[in-house]
Length: 176
Image (cartoon, rainbow, N blue to C red; front, top):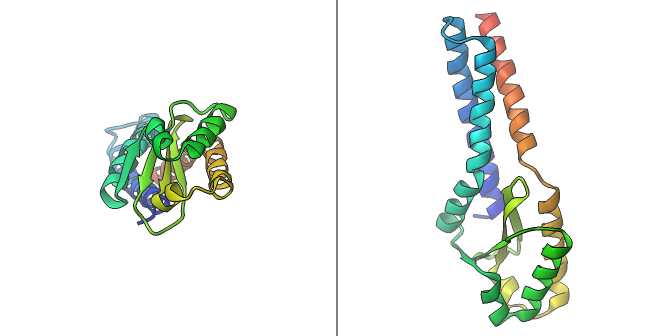
């Protein structure tokens, strides 16, 4: 399974769980056990929780389903010093702190990165890419992935989930 598929599955599952919780909270609002503001705060809270747990869940899924192993940059430097230097330079240039590298034993050539709020970044590289000693082939894909990581933020996705779930709650309350 590709690493990006695991992220998509996590996002879909958390959205479905959020919708189920929104239906339950709408029932509580309808029964006057909870107010509309309390329901909105609860919805925001579980979406923040889903956001914060995302790297932990993805780490576990990557180890379990993609068979990745996390390495330190020094371990990569022993076998491929050019790659380690290129990764270090890119991290310094983009101000990415403490990059964790993972090597996936997959047939795909997909590089993938994820993290939380620009902190604690993970970069997943296919094993075939590490064995390649042609720096000209490796560095552009790593640069592109690290650039994508520095620009991505899953918080916006979860804020959108929150808005949809609050709208669903309010629709259920007012239509029933």
